[in-house]
Image (spheres, rainbow, N blue to C red):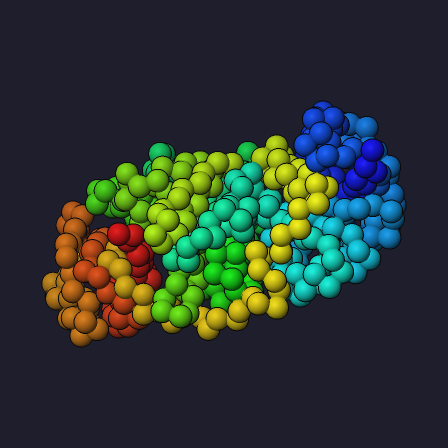
Length: 426
Ligand SMILES: NC(=O)c1ccc[n+]([C@@H]2O[C@H](COP(=O)([O-])OP(=O)(O)OC[C@H]3O[C@@H](n4cnc5c(N)ncnc54)[C@H](OP(=O)(O)O)[C@@H]3O)[C@@H](O)[C@H]2O)c1
């Protein structure tokens, strides 16, 4: 009989508790799948006395000591890109332990160095839960969709943002209102900056881009814009044009460079991404001649995230040893970042302007000067001397040209708020 596969778990929060409970409930079946008995031999968290609602197996006070026990795998479920999580993962890999983690921030920042460390020590580092929670997109990109070069990965990767945008659309309420409610219901953190500002999506996108394009994760190459400035008006106008606003993480090939950005985008209401609602996640992979593949499901929460962690543990126990980012670490390229501002698309533009003669002509002039041509326009109501919203859809235009025009337009004293620009997906 093969020896038991010993598991040390650091962190007993939402995800860690889910993993302990799933192993307690389905350990026998999962052991059969792994080909050896799965056994939790040590766990640690911050507070030994916290009521967890289940029997805590093998409590250990010093979380860093988990890297030095006889465990075969250290499961890091603390979080954070530096500090104790980083120290634990480095130490576990250096001590020849496999590591399973859900920590996107850590891997987006230190992925290459950690992959090198894992390889040097002949162990694996797995992170299925780190991007899109329960959706097995890491495995799909690392092992499934490898025959054809991937052209693009687009994802709704943050459930909090998707929940807020979905609620704004269904209720017509403003961003701040819906955010407060989401916080009260536990869908948003007390400090929501990382979610609504797009940073969390950027972490996940950096990992998916690495797997898709064979590059080292490069968080600094991701241009990031959040959803804080989206208004109920934008959502209503989008709907009139047959679109819905989603926060997308997009990584795409542009020549021999990669463009990575996180931004609100208008997606057609009938598209797969537009129909990812509430706290769900969705990922679209454009795999060239192999076609387009769409994945959707729950991107966060105890059971979906634990499901992904358990899959990694079972894979590690069964001896599967695919490279961390799908290729040997030494072959992960550092491709130049594309100039994303040259990417072309139609744009939705919204201006809050004083309803006085000549404003529209001035805006049209600024747009024409920057080479931006208008396909359609809506002005809602008339309120002489008062602010009104003007919305325009452009023909395909580079982002840089639109930004140039909006800078000039925004400088006018007739323009009351920062003009809004949102790309429209084909
Ligand atoms: N929650 C999700 O749905 C989800 C989805 C995908 C990925 N993730 C990732 O999974 C990881 C864990 O997330 P989570 O939501 O489970 O977090 P969480 O609920 O906040 O739990 C964090 C755990 O880490 C422990 N901890 C914190 N600081 C510690 C320290 N200095 N020393 C020892 N233990 C410490 C806490 O101990 P105490 O319990 O004693 O306070 C707690 O058990 C993060 O990397 C997160 O990004 C989460």
